[in-house]
Length: 358
Image 1 (cartoon, one colour):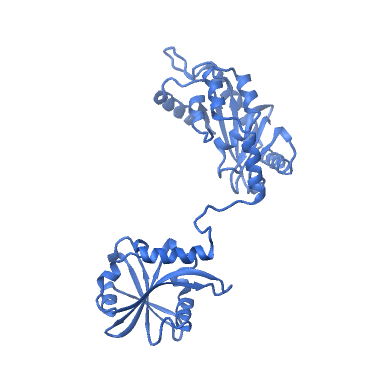
Image 2 (image 1 turned 45 degrees about the vertical axis):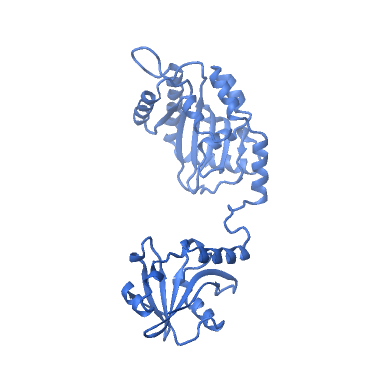
């Protein structure tokens, strides 16, 4: 016979703050009182039942919710009740767990099979009780993590100066030349952070970034631990990415840009350690607010990267218009596979798909 079915809030043993939830069901069975302690999964805002079992049982007894003698059974629900796990928990002289079967538990609680089949998170009463307790402890329990004020302020600053995707699309659709596209993109370098940064919003963007014996149009520093450096050459939208003749090669402007990057990468990789140190020096100066190479720092400011670790270098050439997406996709992949490190080729049509802004 079931005599109790509640959501119990237990505290953290270190802070004594109420921080954890589990379902508690008490039964009078053939061998006396049995208490089923069911972990609530996502509804549990604290430690698991396994870690907190001593705190849970002690608080139940101290508060008079459960009267000894009693046998405690730890319970984890799976997708199907037949896959649930059960352990009989004893506390003398130390806490020990003894695995037991579903059939044994049913016998201990008096054969109430519908109780084991009842999924706690699908039980409206249990879900309601759990949510009441969670929201009482934290009114924003299910809300997205809120960033610091400085991050929020920087996001608002970036949003205020954003060029729209519509404006960039207009440039592309009008067949703008390289200089006109670059002039617009240099007004808002966040567009490159949005396109290439991982993790999102953790980036520093540059324009006219020095590289070996020349410069690339744009660069993005991003990543965690090991810094990713994305080097970007931008061409116009007044030509098709792939020539219309029977050779079906990339337009000469794309090939020329890729060749320039390859040549400069060759110089860099001959002394990669020097380039790595220089890149991290530039990063540090930008993080301190210096507008070196037109530095544009993302919302999170400093990158969480290690200056002593290797860097990852990626290269991109953007230009031209797509006429046959499938054909060009195969050609781009083949082109990338021919070079080490690979050079990614994108038309303005494919590049625009990267942008989330409206």
